Length: 220
Length: 220
DNA sequence: CCGTAACCTTACAAGCGTTAGTTTGAAGAT
DNA sequence: ATCTTCAAACTAACGCTTGTAAGGTTACGG
Image (cartoon, rainbow over all chains, first blue to last red; front, top):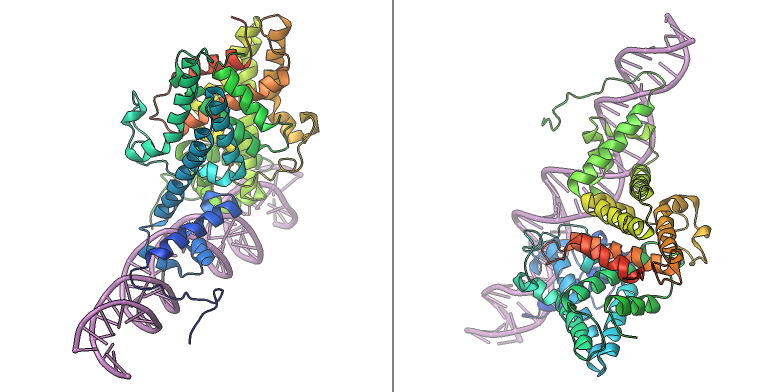
């Protein structure tokens, strides 16, 4: 019997050599679940399999285990965030405007897709990727490759503040420290908004702008 | 059969009317698990029962369900934090010193007991307590009683900034907004430090002091 | 010595990650 | 046009943990 219906059980087999197609569908399914359910542990082998209309063990052809799926979701997420910020900042010639645009984009990313953001930057389970724990490093250069890519957005932030300072628009004497402060502050701002939505929050945009100005020491 | 507990099975029964004793032991067990495992979902009925050397269903005499246990842990946690801040700030006559002391205490609480802090302010699962979701409110006065108590520490922060402004030590014109910014910023600072321990973080104390100064608009 | 508070054992249905073995059907060879 | 092969999917099942229901036992206070 030929199954062409996409909803029916079982999947029309991929062509030879195109098994990788399913891999992408699995990740996409995992992302859909994450966005819909809003919690990382809603991503189970079986839920992903259901979502992708697949038998659970079929996943093992493409991923070593459950964590590998989540890692894939993570990588895509970090890349998406990086691209978003690059896109938004590249167009801005003015350093202050660039800083603000980047910060706003970061915050909006977090609020638009809260579950994904929480997985990216607040994963509760096993942040035991090599290099995540251990003694603190002198510079982020010492972090493993995975984190180099993951913290690319942060580097953009450091540069943005440094550019403001170089242009005489900011009093920052330590762009790295100030970027760190600004980054974590925005992190807290978006997470708390997600956690207590009914709190009388000021608009996120103005909060981000205030943080950027005060922490980034922007001249008025 | 594997004995996971050093204690023999079964519990010496409490006296009549003292069943409440076990209730406290259950909560204590849950707190121990949370601190040891570092994740909220390590608190299961059965893990708590094991930790308390109790049969799992015995918990139902004292708690309606799993969530009720966590709620109890939450309530204790919020109260502990509130007390800590009250203790630390009550002794300080100088408003700026009081602000700094309170902020530092908050941050230290979060770093000393990371798992508990995350459950208090970053609970991933079902923040569906009445009033947590829904339309945003005009003031925090509209939040339900549970959250009134829970946000007591925040009120202290608003007052502290207002006191600084009143004493001419801060340029804040909107203590509520500034307190909000400062609160969420500290939240982000501690969470990120927990999430990426190897990042070359500046000392938490100085980060908190910087945030308090810049966001609280403390005069130099 | 009874009633009942306090705690117990047993059991169930779900759901999980994972392993093992089997079917299917398109690609390439004959 | 037919056969062969094997990647890509399947079904079945194991062993585990979970929350919870139902009902049994023990020993203290009246």
